[in-house]
Image (tube, rainbow, N blue to C red; front, side, top):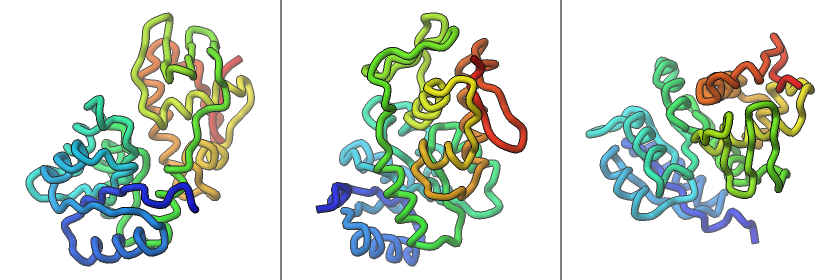
Length: 229
C-alpha cells in the first residue's frame, strides 16, 4: 500500500467548484482523506483538532484571511510542523511572499492543474529528514539533527521545517554551489524547477534568522547558493 494513503489533507477554500475538484483528485488519485473548511476561523479549529498531514490554504477567505491562518498555525507548537501549500491569484504576489516568510512551504497560483497540486502535495509529504544523524558545525552555526535544533553562537534559533532542511543541505556540502533546481528537488522534492523564487524567498528568510552568521550563505548569481568554507 502507498505509504501516503489515508493521510488527511485539510482543504481550506470557499469556492465550491475548487473544493469539489480538489477533493475528488485527492481522494481518488491520491488516496488521501480530505477535510474541508470554508473560512479562516473554521480552518484554525479543524487544524488544531485534526492535526492534518498537510493544509492547502487559500489566501482569500471569509472571516479570517489565509495569511492570518498561516501565521497562527506556524506560531502554535501543536501545528507549526504541519506543511502548508497556499492557493493564490496571480495578482497576490506580495501576499504570496509574506505567506512564505510566515513559514508556508509552497504556493500554487490559480488557475492550476489538479494533477500538479497532487504532485506537489506528495513531494512535500515524502520529504525526509537530513541524512546527518550527528551534530554538524560550520563556523558559528551548529545543527543538532537528532533534536532538530539549530544554534548560532550557542544561541538557539527557530526555523521552519523547510528552512531547517535547506540549511542542512547547504551545511552538508560546504564550498559546493547548489543550483536552485537541485535545492528544489532535494528540499521540496520536485522533479523539475517549478518556481525558483520559492528558493530565493526561503534563503532570504533563513539569512534573517541567522543574523550575524547570514554571510555564511553566499549567492552565486544566475545559479544558486553555497555555504562558505
